[in-house]
Image (cartoon, rainbow, N blue to C red; front, side, top):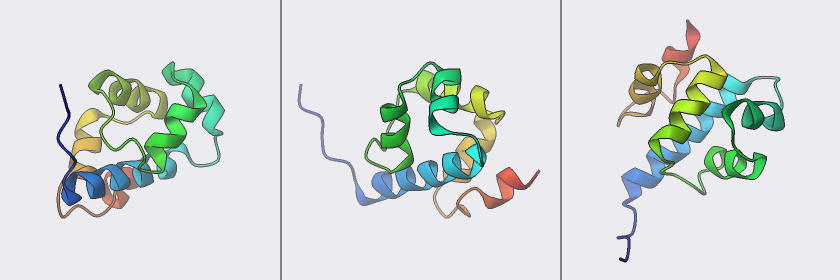
Length: 91
């Protein structure tokens, strides 16, 4: 089965998600967060840079847990017209 290409909006949402993760990670290393989430550092790097703009649900859930974020915060921050996560991460 061939996967249809991502729309520009889906790519942009993936980039916003990556920015959100980098902000939430703060001073912690990519290796530390990836290990806590059960991912490789390369997978986290691809997600953070937008090269993997549609990670699987359980990958997102594991990253949220490792970063202390709720899935609701992530969804709101990545929604169309969102503020890039600044409001969701401020609290």
